Image 1 (cartoon, rainbow, N blue to C red):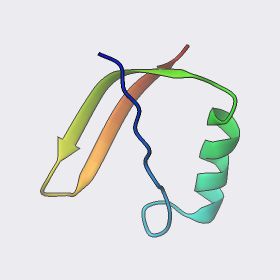
Image 2: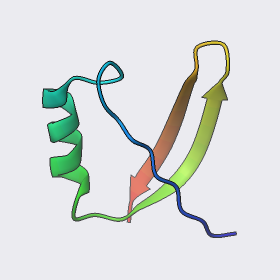
Image 3: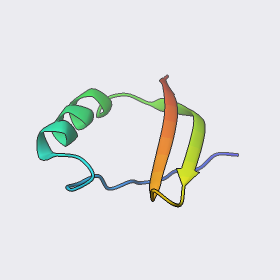
Image 4: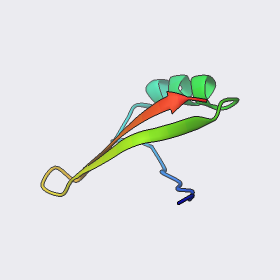
Length: 52
């Protein structure tokens, strides 16, 4: 199965400085998602990914 998702990160989830760091590392790379976990109580999603 192949799909695409978009996650909008922004305060208060992460600071603007941290978001800029994430974008600078990820903007020119493709990642393969190895695992996704959802925690409904904490309202969080954790993604484990490997650069491809």
